[in-house]
Amino acid sequence: MSVENVIEVRGLQTRFGSHVVHDGLDLDVRRGEILGVVGGSGTGKSVLLRSIVGLNRPSAGSIRVFGMDLDELTGEAREALEQRWGVMFQDGALFSALNVRENVEVPLRAVPGLGDDRRRALAELKVAMAGLPRLANDKFPSDLSGGMRKRAGLARALALDPEIVFLDEPTAGLDPIGASAFDRLIVALRDTLNLSVFMVTHDLDTLHACCDRIAVLAEKRVLTTGTMAEMLKIDHPWVHEYFHGPRARAAQPLDEGKG
Ligand SMILES: Nc1ncnc2c1ncn2[C@@H]1O[C@H](COP(=O)(O)OP(=O)(O)OP(=O)(O)O)[C@@H](O)[C@H]1O
Image (tube, rainbow, N blue to C red):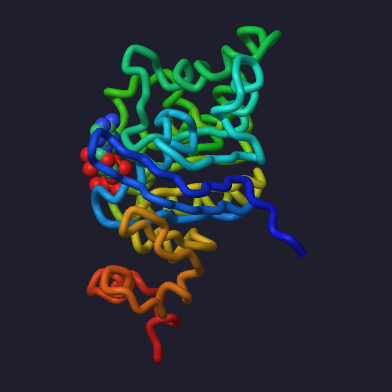
């Protein structure tokens, strides 16, 4: 059975002035998978996410999402493609002057013919789906904990019933219990909504708990992709240190740690 790729990146080069961040980067994201993107600080994980969603223009190479190149689309066609994904940025990127429900309503305002009541009800549904209590709807970002802000950002990413969700370090800054609850939420949402998930993370527990495959960014490209079991066998200094270092051992589920 052939695997359907929802994202295909080929020969991507990204440069800022003389600083080359990506050079000859290839990556596939398969429909229905949770792909974890890891790499040292500054290897260009967030820039890759921003490039795929069209916020950063590549210097060379191609990025196709659902078989379409964002750069070749204009106007309504580009908007239609952009509405097939949702992005949760690292700090939630919420509008501080809007409460949680109003933040989630922002993308819904682009839907033609959606009345105020229905838009409000839909936003409240997404807030609930992101695991926030009803009373969170009326709170402003400054009144929320870091974990609640992340969930509000997730609710906004889900507003338009996306097929792909991009998550930039979803568990960063969360306590271990909050992070593990967030991991479970991501898997549950993928399963119930048939999402494909592109997730930048440093969190080894999240990689174990959520990710079907992992892509490692190093040397300006995707050095390797595979399952956690495959990562454990890679003989590259950074990959080995990352997946076998002290933190990795602590994150390993007990059955994997044996033998
Ligand atoms: N708009 C920009 N202009 C110039 N340089 C940039 C810009 N955006 C990112 N960079 C540079 O690109 C490199 C990669 O940044 P990026 O944020 O993608 O790293 P990262 O892998 O996500 O790191 P971290 O794990 O620390 O978040 C960094 O050196 C950063 O300074």
